[in-house]
Image (cartoon, rainbow, N blue to C red; front, side):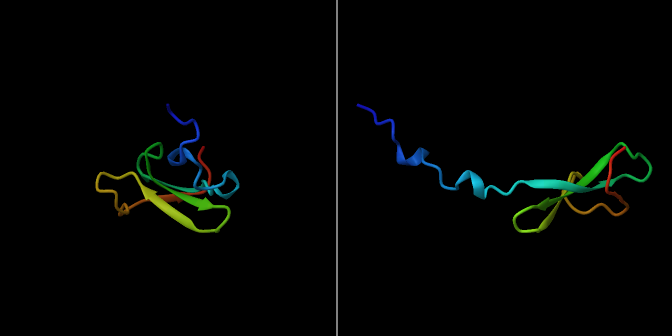
Length: 71
C-alpha cells in the first residue's frame, strides 16, 4: 500500500514566508534600449536587493543604463 501522507512532500516553508523578489531596476544596453542586460529585484520581507545579469558571462555589463521604469 502507498501512503498519501508522504513526509517528503510536506511543505518545508509556510506560504506566508515566501519572499518573491519584485523587479525595481533594469539595466539596458545604452545603444539598444530594448535589450535588457540585467534586473535588480527587491525582496519585500528582508528589503534585500539582488541583481541578476543576463549577459553571456553572467557578470556585470561594462556599459549599462539603469532605468526604474520600462517604456
